[in-house]
Length: 378
Length: 102
Image (cartoon, rainbow over all chains, first blue to last red; front, side, top):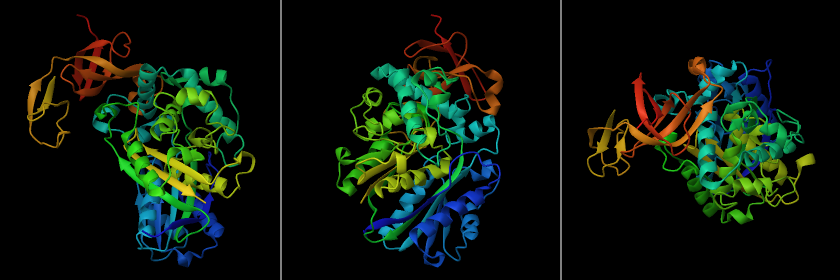
């Protein structure tokens, strides 16, 4: 395999943008990325798009050539990847494979989602379609409900508390408040989080990530650049929660992490910062455990103790995460990579951490049926 | 309720998969007792369009006595992890369970 580097990044702010179409968002991120990388459109050899549900959210299908055309990319293969909330993580993984394997020298990856043009219950329904429609969804399960059942079980098995969950939200809002591109730039208190409107017991509104519009892009190139992809892997698991033996851990996360660590030649202790998939607060707690940052059951207490804070031992989601930065689902995986790159280039402004030479991104699809883990180094 | 049991390893499923976890592909129908325990559960206060009229409602992952798990609706008083439950009915592929009465 050839070495692969990230030579350009670009992203739109995340938020509610009634005046911007899915095409506007994707093209804005892609254009910024090419400019950042100093690469001409004609040098891009393939285009990979991560998008979860454009056809449901905005009615447009055949999205990859639609966006490639908007970017002025001619003749190149343009392909869409769908893996629920891990759609652009998956696009990134496959783009890396094509460059590492010598098929292309330069691939542009864009992740995009336009969610806010639909009313709340319809958004919930579209998101739920990433679950098992014949079983859990038919019974009324939503993604908040699935992660609520995961949280209930984690609390039952390990003694995790609602305060532990809320401490993830407080920390990610504190980071997001420092991120000019974040959807919700405001700090919250533990009491506020605990008193939030209940969505699915024990998860309140503050335990849930945001419904956002946005796009992010990265340009991958063969060779040893400043920011290198040290390791990356994707893994899968069964779709339905009821088909998993233990819902307090995600085997796909462990499998992808295991491969990515081996490829990178680093262990969990050497990761200096990470962007984790906090679609719900409990998901960040479990990710800490599955990635080996803490022992099983310790994710909640470690967060409450400040282990993952901006000035903590292992800063997690310095961008604000899905909770505060926002979660346009198809854009999230590539957006995590962009935020790691900003930290590694020491361009993260107010939220810059001191040690940022080895970073990890973990992008989760559904209730753990897809996971992509990426390790970057400079 | 009817379950599908792998003729090799005995694992039971609510819906017969193409392959068992043991990689075999032969299943025999068996009748379930309709009794089990709550593996996890939650009460929803927000739902997808199709279920909004039922709010608030509780769903649970039930582990049946035969070992199969399914996601079901809870009817009647709320249940908690570990509680014994029994089948209360089924309609349109959705199973309803309630706290065990016996």
